[in-house]
Amino acid sequence: MKGRSRLWIIGIPVLIILWLLHMPAVQSGALATGDSWLFGLYVKLLAAGLAGAAAVGFLFFEKCRGHEWKLSQIYPAAGLFLGLLYMTVLPPLSAPDEISHYISAYQLSSHMLGQPSNSEDGHVLVRVQDWMIEDVYGVAPVQEKDYLTRQESSDESRWPTLLGQVLTEDTYKVIYGSDLDVDAWMDRLAESLSQQGGDGTLSEYAVSPYPPVVTTPLVYVPQAVGIALARLLNRDSLWLLYLGRLMNLLFFVAITWLAMKRLPFGKEVLFGVALLPMTLHLSASFSYDVMILACMFLFTAVCLDLAYEKEKVEVRDILLLAVLMGVAGPCKMVYGVLMGLCLLIPVKKFGGWGKWLLSAMAVAGVWVIAMVLVNGRVVADYAAVTDALVSGTEEAGFSLRLLLHRPGLLMQIFSNTIVHQMDEYHLTMIGSNLGNLDPVLYVPYQAVLLYTAGLLLLAFRKPGESLRIVGGRRVWVIVVCVVCGAALMLSMLISCTPQTSTVIEGVQGRYFLPFLPVLLMTCKNDWLVLTKNRNRSILYVMCCMNLYVVFRLFSVVCTRL
Picture (cartoon, rainbow, N blue to C red):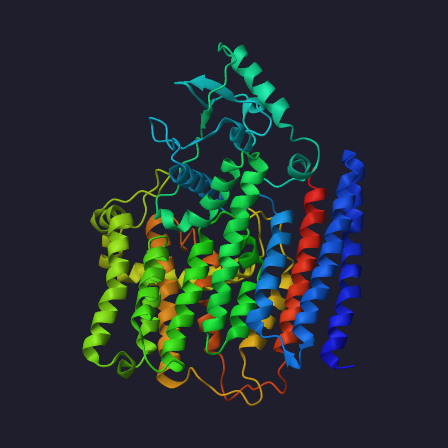
């Protein structure tokens, strides 16, 4: 039997051992709460994990009609399978800022259906039964202006519980147990209204206190389609949440698959980045990071294909680049720096400098127009403000004008940040803290190191592999990625960092994921060449590591009573 097939077979018992290691924690949680179904769900998680590991292992290591399965053929199965597992263990609204993304998608779904989307004061309207998502136990509703709104109260027992905001065993009980009774919740809601002086009559819509994200609505189309479908079918709130997440996951897997097919090289690197816990967690959430990641992955793939493989640039290629940048750019304008990858494409492939200039103006022009339409006021405010205050605080922040007049201060705070924060960026990029950056829902440091080693091994040169990104092109790719990272940090310095801080605040490692694949592709060199090509084994091990992460996270939540 081949060595790689042995790895496939060994992976199954190793997963069972890892599952058994965390079983006592699940049993402890089930005994403490009396929720015996927790252990049953844990067993189902093992069954699904083993079946998925076997299926993915077959695709990685067995041949079809004498030929190996291509990585681009394997990824959709692996990405969808692991994304669904993460979606199960880290349920709706548990991802970073997911409540705001959910509300934004809900607002767009109302526009799609021709339903009322906002109240008179601009807050988003949701179906009254969907108010349960934001107030699971029905403790705080009041009647105001024919809509339901949140009650401000100093009594903590009156504070509403947002589903999944803090992921505990109670969250599992609501979703997978017997705590979610829509009829009983609606009865409690009507009773609460009566006690507060109302007649107990429920409105058709409720007002969400959570503000939507101010950005292009295009980044919420997949999630909104899922929500709209649930509303059309008159499904309950959990159906609505999971259909919204599922559509986002399907979109991410589909676009990443297209990027993997389009890449002339480095498919294994993109596959590896797509298998990171943070990437999988985001892909199975309402987050608009899904749109950013997917668009930037495909944008990079198109640029590299045009630079190294395709003989001639066509109009449809330019249109695709423009659309991708126009959709994702307004979410975080700093990713516009990645348009620099277009400069890898030789001018002769455009048919001359004239067509090259028209193409450059088309891509950059669409990005600029999108920026003006969506973020024009924000950019103008940053440029004009002199006495900045950090959002949500009364502390003085750094204005762009201040930094331009004090370049030494700018260099100092960047230097401090690189020295003191780079380890945190690395950990959070891989996915050390999942959920709402919950310190309890962490991936062990040893696993983070293994993921990192896997990415590097995928990036290094293999026997017989030719170098593609070399010389000046390698330098340029690194410059583009470094400038993009610096722009991210600068944006957070201006918007989130008080002058009392010695490091830049607000930067998260996940912000570096959009350009991580192309940066890793520059690691191939003549100095370090691996003796064997173990890409498939490495990717399979990374898949199995995600199953371990899922088992561990489930056990942690079960004991978080």
